[in-house]
Length: 343
Ligand code: NAD
Ligand code: UD1
Image (cartoon, rainbow, N blue to C red; front, side):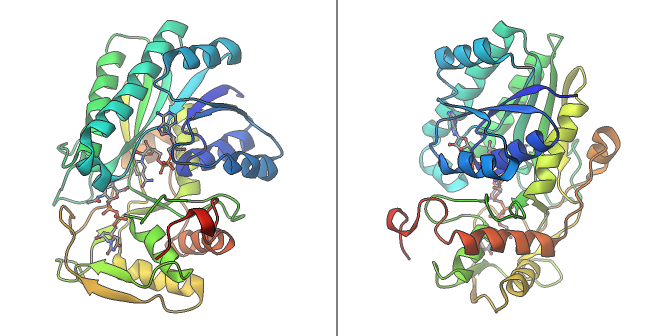
């Protein structure tokens, strides 16, 4: 059934792919984004991909007055809340910025939803809420813990949403993403990180496109088959479809779901698949382990399969081919080389 979905942070990496999926499924997304980590060019790309230009309001979600105007004008049925800061290292350097932004936006949004009688919410959480775990696969009942301020905000917001839902009438899904990678198969939208990427796939794709010299593989002495870290990479289009499934299956209360593939790939597996996609070997060196990294992390996806009827279907090869198409078409993202820092 078609509905109007407020998408906070809808011009960002995961939000923009979800907006495309919403439009294709017949929904009407209304995007709010302050453009702090995205470009207005994404809106044009969404319009040319889907033939629909979604309603967009540039605002900070923490600005309650601006949010009220959107709810008053747009007849919102439900909300997907992506907006927030997400860089782990930056959160350690500037913890207050993370608490203020991530909590501030969520408190403002929840207060407005309450005032407007809108009680259906899908929240972007993260596998980071499991802290550093040694037991895989990780299911939703695994112990929780934060190892940095970013993780603490995700964990804190999950707790806040559980408390709110316990008052009755709310239907909330907490989606714990594992490692989102890839891009829309058109190459028109994709991940456009500001500064030096922290995460594996955007970093190695910037090496492949010539923006960086080589990938540093953080540790080859883990207790894994090839010694490098294992993660559960999920194609961003699968992730986008996971949001639609979560919306379709919202139930009274607050429920957490892992969104991953349920399978792990090592850093060397990703390098091999990416090199194949790019058509040449991507240079790398072995470097020391990164502080705070676990050896092996992948999801138990049973709950999403049984309760949301959702399974990720795209392969690591597709993730690399699609991420490379985006990166090679937009070597410097949406900003272009003049406004992006060089090597
Ligand atoms: P992103 O930075 O690309 O997108 C976030 C969007 O929100 C950006 O467009 C930014 O401009 C906007 N924004 C930030 N603060 C805002 C505010 N106060 N008001 C309005 N707009 C604001 O990030 P993403 O990778 O698409 O991640 C989306 C969500 O998913 C985040 O909450 C992130 O923590 C979570 N998440 C991401 C990953 C990942 O690897 N990308 C993993 C787990 C969880
Ligand atoms: C990181 C964050 C985590 C966040 C997740 C998704 C840390 C410690 N953890 O997790 O909180 O939820 O991103 O945003 O930052 N790697 C390299 N070289 C690189 C980059 C990464 O070898 O230049 C390795 C890592 O050691 C790891 C794997 O690649 O084994 C994946 O790393 P990354 O993409 O950063 O994701 P996570 O470690 O899962």
